[in-house]
Image 1 (cartoon, rainbow, N blue to C red):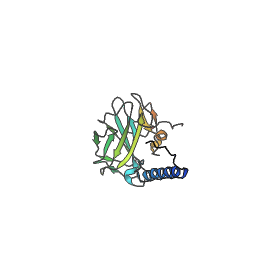
Image 2: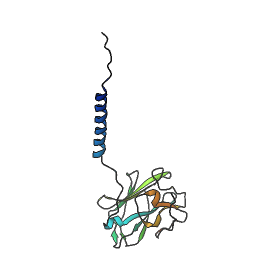
Image 3: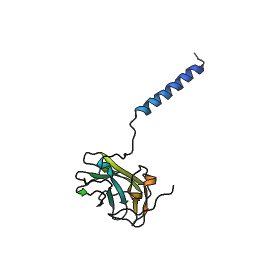
Image 4: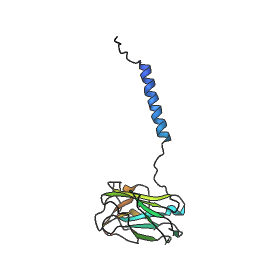
Length: 177
């Protein structure tokens, strides 16, 4: 017994289309968004990743842009492969810089660097090379934050510094996009 195929009505097709759109909108509305860290008046938000040397002797510099010293005890650094973290300690003076020679084994082609406070809250992050929009430095150069500030836009915030400024304010030129 053969049956003939009947084409669905236009009204039925529109109802299916509208239901699909509503379903997708509901999924997007209730999906957790991955927001970048935001700058607040919280003291911890004043500490930022300021300079990274991912090749050769790797180091990461932090800067405290706040007006109060920050105890870094229990804070830690991680990279995209979060199985390895580096626990921090000590005091970072207001307006000061500290450099950590790291054991994170940053990826030469690109990686993400994350700074967490002692509660596990993400304080700052940056992504370079194939893992982000900050540029990739060659051996002997650093990826330095422009003007020691954080706008949450790696393409604007970071540039290559041919003369790293370990433990001091960055002298890298701004980015022309």
